Length: 92
Image (cartoon, rainbow, N blue to C red):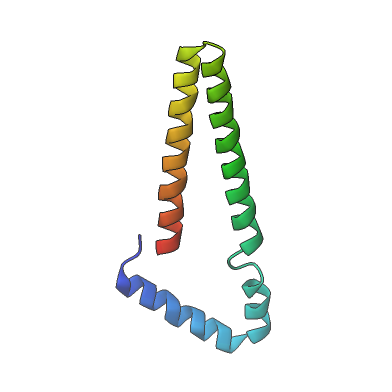
């Protein structure tokens, strides 16, 4: 993690570069953020967690208790990791 001083220095450098060559700055602004991938990643994670949870329930209904428990733990761990990853990206 960068300190406040380092972030301020980077912001100054970025401003200087943008004022020096606005066309180059416009080219890089297109790649900043990538909103399409964030949504796609969330959909894929949600789909994977849903499928794992459904498979866990099917295993439980079939009498495979240990398999169901393992899949349930994987689903829970994935959901917790997705929540913490989402929060970390929102803070930056």
